[in-house]
Length: 308
Image (cartoon, rainbow, N blue to C red; front, side, top):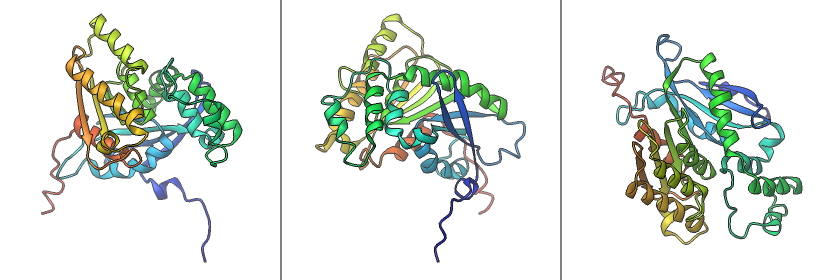
């Protein structure tokens, strides 16, 4: 007989603790999944960099289990880090499509072509959201506030993490995918304490996204980005296959990659990667691991050598 129940978090993500944090800046309550690296409880003098993830309700489940293996991978080791996946609670978790537009789109970001009351309204009969959620989605598309979400991460959440965990404050990471990738690109240009950033298949609208104007302003001012890294990925089929992702993701991403490499910001270590065979639906974890290999490569462990 099948017995329906809700498992403990430790049964699914044994190295993860869950917290909820009220944000005065955003005006909401966030869910925060914190996953510590192997031997965190044994190496009591060690500190570890924090890596933030947006869309934490999904990101934690997809990527946190691998953290137990990355440090001692005998092929491509990753330096140990504290993974902090930030997502939503309660009703907002049920309306994630709407509220993530609030948090992940830069202020003033133009809306997608053809997005209006009629097109958003089609999401209701499709079962993707109720009418109130659709109205909220359109409101946040018109009034995005990634600046507030970024301030929550750096000014509200980060101090709580340093008080609770052993954090290496010299390095802080951030990875986001899709709209989260747009947020990561925006954050990379703000010169906050977050200095190793991964942007996966970012929803950058070619030619018109606010990140282009911000980039130009940083370039014109001669702002120093020394010690900062931005790794951007996109799936090859997003570029080559006829789909909505060609104009909405690929065009702007390739344009930004070209801009960052042809007219680099002073000191910014930019890298780009086109990931083979991954569509927008499947590229998230591939982008995450590409980011870790590029920005958090670790030394080889002797753990498995000693076992042979």
